[in-house]
Length: 156
Figure 1 (tube, rainbow, N blue to C red):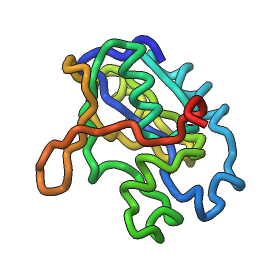
Figure 2 (cartoon, rainbow, N blue to C red):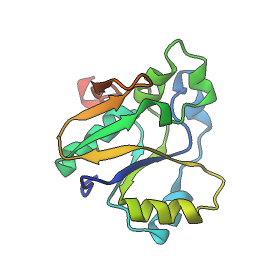
Figure 3 (spheres, rainbow, N blue to C red):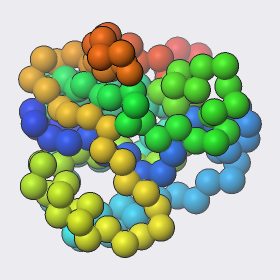
């Protein structure tokens, strides 16, 4: 979680959202992908998305003392989440995706994507900033604050 740097590219594996449609019961942990990524490039931070993209990105930002801007149009929304009334909200907050969320320099990101040959997709979804706040750029270009609304184990 610690190590994200301003200017890093934010990436995720696979697709997000859809746990209410039981997607989380049919997942395969991204262990092979994590190892392959770590062997191919220098990753500055990484976490698995278990509590929702918004919450787990917040954990990286908090631990690293940075902020983030993600692009709503670049978030890979699962087929299951597309069934929801608010697919983006599902992808941001449902959790139990067990995909990888990681940051790395632009140079390392290009190297990774140019050589990535695994069947699991990697998507660039945003950039780490110095602002210490999380934001999301909507399709209309408006930038809104992004609150961590995923699952919180300590609130129960």
